[in-house]
Image (cartoon, rainbow, N blue to C red; front, side, top):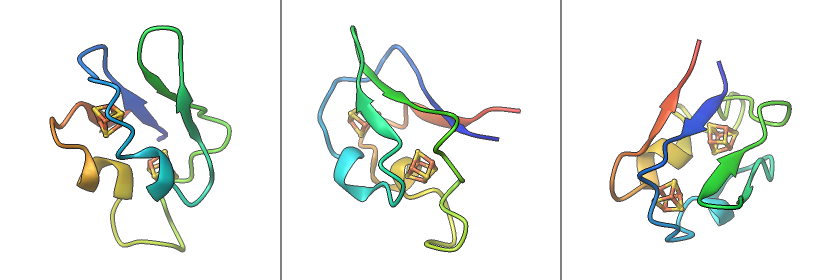
Length: 63
Ligand code: SF4
Ligand code: SF4
């Protein structure tokens, strides 16, 4: 279940330095998660840290 950044992302850059797998980068319109790199932060944090730091709650885990 990788993280997915929704279109409402305001490109604030808060999540990028927090990702332990360098899975987040700036996309054409908003930040994006590379699903091949996202591990839900397992082994690093108890919960997905990008979701924890996003100020507008625009990241979710997808099935
Ligand atoms: S859940 Fe963790 S590994 Fe996945 S994109 Fe967010 S910070 Fe990176
Ligand atoms: S923290 Fe949230 S609003 Fe900011 S760049 Fe990341 S996904 Fe977008």
